[in-house]
Image 1 (cartoon, one colour):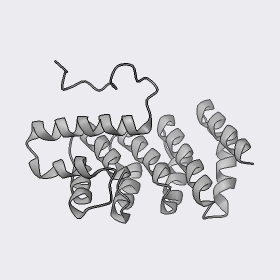
Image 2 (image 1 turned 135 degrees about the vertical axis):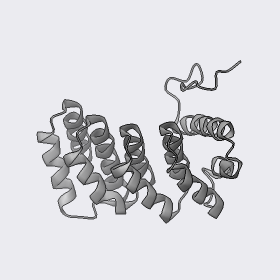
Image 3 (image 1 turned 180 degrees about the vertical axis):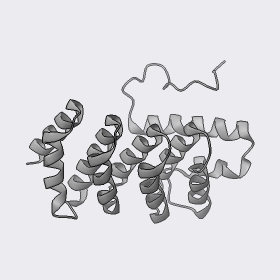
Amino acid sequence: MKNDNENTLPSGSSKSSSLDRYRHSSELAAGAIRKRGAVRIRGAVRTRGTQPSGEGVSAGLKLLKDPHTEIRRNAVLILTGLSDPSAAAALVTAAEHDPEYAVQAEAAEALGQIADVRAEETLLRILSGHRIHHVRLRAARALVEIIKTNGPQHATTVAALSQVAQKDVSLTVRNELAHSLDKDA
């Protein structure tokens, strides 16, 4: 029998696609929701990846306020699949203000996946000032993805990324940005 607390991907999928990761996250979120008896929020799991519905977006937004970190992380994954402006705004807030670094990192990555240009300034703030290198790395990746998709919205974005690529204290962040910027040049 499968352990309800298992946070690993199904066996044999170490390099699973994003869809598999989201599907698994939906399953985790559904299990946590059922355990807590929050029947009204289950619609968020079912609607993720489809066109936005008021119920799915509002349920995802409620999950972002849950006291449990894993549920908030799964809420980020749910909202990533919904192309709704309020979902994007909630992801921006989560990336910058969630109390858990894991949720901040997941939200930063989600902003890159939805390529919302309104997130550029927030991601630049995270990239230049967050103390956890993993969150900065995910913000850097998100910014590169947004620029690839939409072009930079602010003249200073590429310059700021170049500066971070030279000066960030994390070798991983510097290398990721240098590689991405060289590849796009």
